[in-house]
Amino acid sequence: MSFSEFLVKVDDFVWGVPLMVLILAGGIWLTVRLKLLQVIRLPLALKWMVQEEDGGKGDVSSFGALCTALSATIGTGNIVGVATAICAGGPGALFWMLIAAFFGMATKYAEGLLAIKYRVTTPDGRKLGGPFYYIENGMGKKWKWLAKCFAFFGACAGLMGIGTFTQVNGISSAITFFFDSDKTNTVNIPFIGEYSWTVIIASVLLALCVGLVVIGGIKRISNVATIVVPFMAIAYIIFALMLILSNLDKIPMAVALVVKGAFNPAAVTGGIVGTMIVAMQKGVARGIFSNEAGLGSAPIAAAAAKTKEPVRQGLVTMTGTFLDTIIICTMTGLAIVITGAWKVEGLEGVTVTAYAFGEGISFLPERVTSFILMVCLVFFAFTTILGWDYYSESCLEYLSNGNKKIVKAFRVLYILAVFIGPYMTIKSVWTISDIFNGLMALPNMIAIFALSGIVVKETKDFFDRRKQEKTNK
Image 1 (cartoon, rainbow, N blue to C red):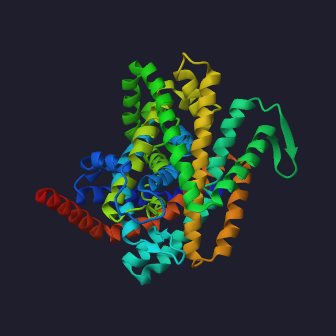
Image 2: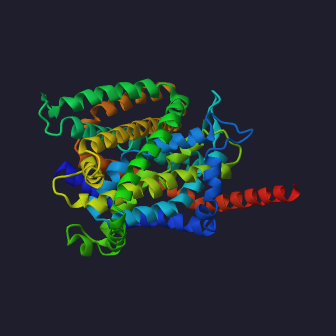
Image 3: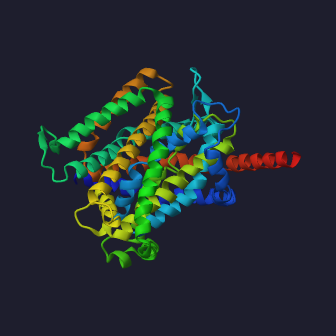
């Protein structure tokens, strides 16, 4: 058995039916107990997303914390992850991505709320929180081993999965596709293989840029994310809307393929991909990769927000899943299905999405659409690398009881992982990332179920107080 085959078997085991059911059941359970909060309270959440709270205490603004979380979620998952999900599971994978995102909004709300409720203040005055603290402080000291498991998997996910390899690989693929698609300017690297000079230069520059930012910690990461994330998200949405509006007549057919493919993939793909379970597996796994609902990463950023109300930050945190998956991933998915890019042989990863935009926006030269997509992907992935550095450092800080030397050594390893990321194969990179994502989700979802009663009580008390305050005015 080859190493790649071994990874696939581990991935299939981790992302088997039990874990998918656990994550979806958690979102459904919270949706019912919170009485469709992700729908009813969404307008308020979007309002608070850009409105600062008076008297809040923390390291960064609520919007800054959201942008840090979005910087980690709006990345290759939105452009490359959607493509890999649809290519592996058919158009129906997009349906399961959206289902996971809808219920995931309730999960994300619970994560943000618990992050603030159980966060701690470090000796140097910083706010630190996340699943490791709400497991230990919410569930009790006897569950500290579970918190340690989450922190270990989180550090590994940042160093060897979602935080580095997948993002850098996506960046290098996009840059190579644009500047050297024929791979004519190559060099043979001993023991590694033949690579384009474009990849080598990109890996060096990217590692340098990441190093300059991550050394500044959460405040510098937040400052960069607050500027880059909103600008690039809006730019990509406009770009995707251009494609959708140019192909309005094909939307009904694309929607029909997505819905039909969710329950009977073979009828849509002609047997090219597997069963409904495969479509569900790829859709849920890539959906969680994209928006991280249930993963437990976003509450690490949420815990640094300047706020005194757990419910308020929970609602702000929830908007991340709405923007990331329900808006951006849907647009990418429709672009791929409308143009049939998922069926073109020889394409994988970012090249699928690049082909879709090149075909779908016919009034622009293909070179222009490829350039725009490359720029969006580079910035999305770059900010994701920054966000996940903070996540994984926080996990390691918890594991090492705040040992600064260990955290600094990890930072060097993280920058090194960014440098070597382009030289790994796309399939192996995404499989490793999926495995660590699943291993992170398991302890976090156990905590979400265990603390769901507290989430419901805090929510009810908050809105009762708010209602009473309005009555007294």
